[in-house]
Structure formats: C-alpha cells, structure tokens
Length: 487
Image (cartoon, rainbow, N blue to C red; front, side):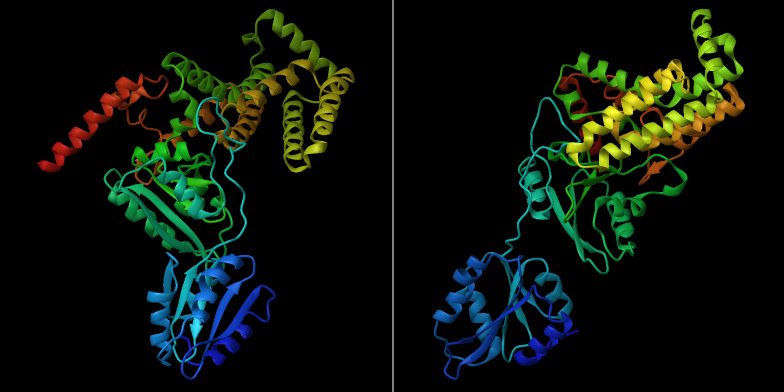
C-alpha cells in the first residue's frame, strides 16, 4: 500500500493504524522554504535515541534555508546535503514504513512527497555482552551473544575477518516481522544446503518468532519421528565461528541470544570448545567420558529393572543379596519404584529451574530429605534403586544438548526393561540405532562419520588429534576440492 502526497492524510492514517498508541510519536515542524513547508518525524518511543534525533536530524533540517518548495526535491536535498547519518533508507510503501519504524528508525516525511526517508537512530536498551551461563568453559572467550541482531553480527565479524563471510538478512513472522540473518562463508558452504535452507525458511508461516526454538521444526526433516535434532544451537560466538569455518550456516534471530546452525551431527553433542584448547590426550579422555556417561544415563536404570525382574542371575552374589533385601522391604514393584523416583527427580529439576533463585536451595534441601533420607528410612524406596537413578541423572548432565533425548529414552528403557526384560532393552536399542543412522540433516547423514564410515574424519571423534595434524588434514581436503573444480 503506497502512501499519499498529503502529509496531513498520512498522519491521520498512521494515527488510526496505531489506534493512538502511547509509544507512537509524531514531531511536526516547518522547513525554512520560501512558502514554508510542513514536515514530520515519526518514531517509536524507546526505540530511537532522542538526543541524536534532535541534534543530528531535526536541528540540521530546521537550521537550513531551502530554495525549492517541491516536497520530493526537499527530501532529496535533506538526504544528500543536510543529514550526515550513515544509515538512510528510502521508504516507498506503508509496509516498509511500519517495518523500519518498529526497528528503531526515525522516518522523515515532507508534505507534497509520497516517499519518506528512514534514518537509523536505534537507541533501545539491551543486555551487555557477557558469558552465557549455560555454556561455561575453562579456557577461551567470556563473550556471549545478546539480543540485538547487529551486535551479534559484530561478534562474529570480529573473529572472522574475511570478505567471504556473508550476512544475509530475511524476515519471518507475519505479525512480528522478526529479522533473521544467515551467516556463512561463501567459498565453503554448500550451495544446495543454502538454497534448501532458504526454501524452508520461506515456508515458515508463523505469526510470531520470539525465540530460536520456533524455527527448529521448520529446519528438521521428519522432526516428529526422531528424538534427535539436526539443528545445533549455541550462545557462544567462538563456537558458532568454528562451525561456520567448517562450512555450516548460522541462523541468528533478532531478539534471541541463541544462534542456530545447520547441519549438525550426532558426535557434536559430545564436543565442547574446551576440547580444542586442552591437550589432545585430555580432550580424548573427556570425550570418552561423555560417551560412557550417555550410555550410562539411558541404560543403567533400564538394565537394573530388567536384571532384577527377569535376570537376577546376572548380578554378582553380593549385590544380588542387597537388591533382594531392598526389594522385599519396599511396597512397590521395582519398575514402578524406579519410575516414581524418575518422575520425582524431574519434578524437582523443573522446580529448581522455574522458581526464584533465593528459593532454589530450599528445593534441594526438601528433595534431599524427602527422596533421600526419609523415603529410604521409611522403606518406601530402596537404597540401590535411589543410587541407580542418581547415577543416571548425574551422568545425563555431562551432555546437556542431549538431555531431552536422554530423559525420554531412559523412561522408555525402564518401561521396556520392566515388561520384556533384556529383550526389551535390545529391541529399543535397535530402534534407536535405526533412527539415528537413518536421520539426515540437510542431506548430511546425522550419524557420520560413523555411518557412513569416513576414516579421515575419525581424528576428531572419540579422540582429537593435535592441531598440527588437523590443520594438515584441512589443507588436504581443500586441495582435493580445488583439484575437482579444475577438472
């Protein structure tokens, strides 16, 4: 919808559009022309810097003398000779006007011209750059992404000073008009993946996009059929930059400190930025520890229930006697007992996440008394059962990205182990492996480099080779790509 040449009509239309909203402001003034020309500046309260608006926009416009009374000529003179702002955009329709206005631009309108001029004067408050609480590291940067998109773009540009680094903006959300930015290296990113990503984002029919998680289902293939996700998420600029240099595409969302990247592989859940700062042997130790923790978190409660219910002969005699005495003293069947503790633990975790921080210690104290000492002393819960669930819960925290998957898988293994015994555990394991190996992330096998097996990529899986070897391998891959292009 195009705007009218009459400034008064435009003002009335915009006032009606915003229904006299308190944050929509209009500053009307006269331009010093032979006949005196009416003009106005439209802003959103709190989105623009008022001091900069007055000093750099309104004062220079009103302080100049103009020869022409033609509205469009006046606007062009203001754009080229009066205002010195670095960011200026021509506004030609109402949709563009609304988008820029609510993005922090001040928009100048002159009577007699249907076009307007938007000046970038964003001055809204935002959280300062700080270390993300969910991705702490021992060695490395203490910076984390923040909510404004432009600040996040700067944090990446500071780390990758290459003209090949591309920032490509899009708009999603029919109501929120949320700006997102695709960030990638043009010489390393697959053109097919980039094209497919844009197609999927263009299909997004959401009204509002308020967090990074809103877009994840639109970037997943058969998202409802898999517990695992092929979309990575991070709040650390150094982590995202590392993914970009590997040829991934980062998706930054205005208003969210969480940055998505695609494609993502399963093995990346067991890698952290500290792995590349520490010595290779210690990085290998921590990675193997995470793999063991993943298996322990999903298998230990289910195997405990299956063995104690159907295969007690698999326990050593000393442990078996303790389990038998514990089970005989508790009123609930073993499977229900493990499920009860599992659900109580998840309730405590959710309570600890949602309640105010000053009350967090109270939840821990109550949980320790109710689930631990009192429940065991009263004979409601057995000590071996409590210990098994506690070990599984602690192990799951070593892989925070997989915590939702681990929680559901652990529950499934407990139920199948209690109903079908060891055969139920084996059956669920086969289903999980099939789901894992059959999943793709934008055409890239999710389980690679294990399935399909790629020997050259095994240097950065269970173990991490030294940077000298990793750098040589990268050079060899690039040389092969270059030779293929020449042929």
